[in-house]
Image 1 (cartoon, rainbow, N blue to C red):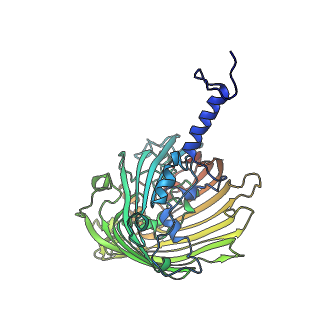
Image 2 (cartoon, rainbow, N blue to C red):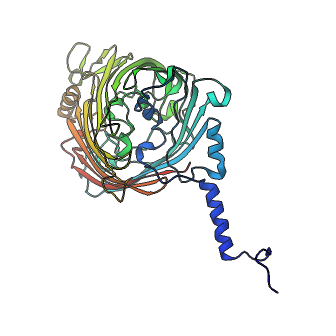
Image 3 (cartoon, one colour):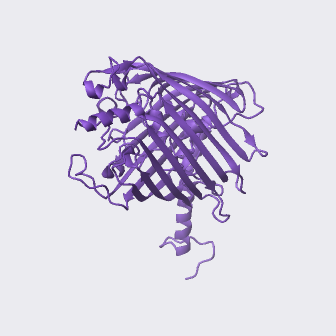
Length: 495
């Protein structure tokens, strides 16, 4: 029996039909995306507040309240079953990603029989996090003009390799710690009102201070913790809340011109902000452990040269901490407390400051491509800090291979100077045979961390980054061998 071309068949589908069905399902999951855009590590979840700071306002906008565009990174499933578009049309933005970081030492650690050395070993580690972001434009959803809310939760896993060779200053994998070892940890949840066409933004809620201040979305093109997230010196006191930690906070940002901004805020200092005792899940809101306040101030200039192809960001800032802190050298009588064994002198307040710059130097064909230089310094109160200052410099070369327009070659170097008071205190303690602070097994003076990597755009929503890290003077100690590590960082944006 023969069938006409239009006759339906109720038997097993032909191979071509099965392929068509599979194609249809994949099409529903993926939506109908445009050709691949530049998916890079600086578009991961958590970078959204930094991107809002780093995005100049248009030259000609109205004075009406607005909600700035939400982050829409390239994803594996940009519009599953049409749901993403349906939600975004109604002001709801949902993102889901995973960042994984692996590092393994290719050099042996310092060996010894004294306390602190016996556990050092050559090894590898893996750390990472899965993250979810929910942004709601309440202007679209409920007619509240200019108002939006933002929330991020994470789950972190694994450990970091640097402690295997004695370094406690800079993690080999930044996605480690602060997550409470729970399935869901709240990073932040806050509301923001944006007025006068973006010229004034007021935010309050559970906020990560260092996601807005002393921040750049470029930092996490690297993996090591001296650089990624933020230059490590900015959280030297553990009183400045940085991702994935948050406190109650209030922040106001103004833009008198489309290339200049100024912002300030007030953030309660919560004792143990990075510890599990108080902030394992991030959902502890009662503020019973508030011990002071920090007030950051920052000003920035964001020029765009060469007809919009060479953006730059130049920022200066500082923060005052109201909580009393111990002097790192002297006791209450002005003598070295390591010798007198008296109580350290207390300072009523302390401070931190920063100067951070980045500038695209060369532009290639793709709008997001080019050679970008970034450099800066964080300088802390030398009487109360561990890290007196951290200086950094780096280069990001994106799209320099014409056939690989979304790949990025990166290299960065950070230099950490330990405060003189800490060094002198440790020298006194070592002469007495006493235990040293900061997990040190020798006197701490200065350290450097070098990272070179190559981010490969594997497919839409997937970045794989082989990398090399080198630790000069781990833990800022001269008695520990330098350490070299090989590893990789991967970022998968699902939605």
